[in-house]
Image (cartoon, rainbow, N blue to C red):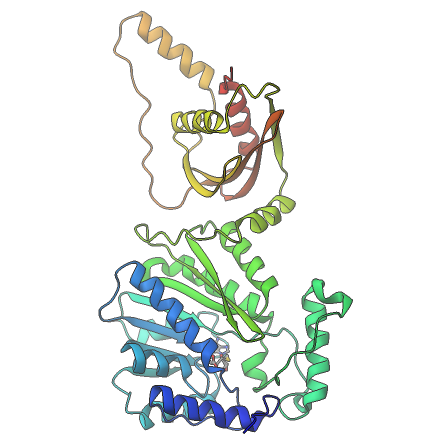
Length: 425
Ligand code: SAH
């Protein structure tokens, strides 16, 4: 038998059957609500599990699913297949009711709590943490936020497939400049779900921006903050926003299922859990950050190739170490690199005066006073992007502001300091 993937009812029944066969879950999926695509949902859970495993978090895992929907899909999958303790939140009364029934029907009430959330509450977690003060540290939170920015006319959702598809395309056109040519093919499946489920103010980017903001307050109360994203452009924006918020411990992934691609983003404030991935996207994110901020350049001639890339790299490391700037390696190649420079204090000013003072003390035989070590607590006060690249005749250093409370002029001062101290042969 052939399944019609454009037919909402076929998808609904197929999903129910798969949930039963593969997970022994008996789930009510109301006809007018979002039908979760199972493989994508499960992929997200598996990705979270990979992250937890990587940091040896294996026992008594607790997670939060923001906007659990009528299906309560993430909570059900996570508790049934991984035995995790889950909290699901939901603003829609009807979804809330069905979600709770789904939990009870599968006798998972000891493992899953579904909580009502006020639509007007800008915080995702305050109600949950207020009512469950024992939840001191949650392992992760996840969300599949409403994708779209604009309100859809009710008649275009669910049933009227063709109209819905044309609207889908027009929304994508607005949101995604890349699609202006209208060359992109029409989506293969139906837009399913009610307004609440697929539309919110500002779309998924605003939703995740709110999560970023709240995470900056809650920090380690949740170990890993994560979200699924429906548009590649949203992922880029969110990665830039995270960096601009001073969050550099992050990672992203792609969930590919047939012709559908979704993206996942995760970030953390834990110092001993370095997500440190960012490999694939770093160049494009840095390009974007560069377009937003002034780039300061310094060329170092190297006509006879007298200096190797490694030599310049080591010299840079030494210079930065002397002014106690930390380096976070973003990319490292044979003849190019990208670093994030983390500065906690202004250490690069008045270096000449400091050198003179040191010389004077040395001459007067007074024991040398070493620079006081900077105590690093909290985030750096300045994050600067630094790119070093080499071609046949020269090296190029580029620096640009990423985030921080220190003035942007500091970027130029740091580059000047590097120039003054780069003694190349
Ligand atoms: N997690 C489900 C449903 C995703 S749709 C799935 O993956 O299939 C997004 C859900 O988030 C909707 O059910 C919507 O009602 C809910 N929602 C929207 N804003 C919310 C908020 N601020 N807090 C909690 N839930 C919210």
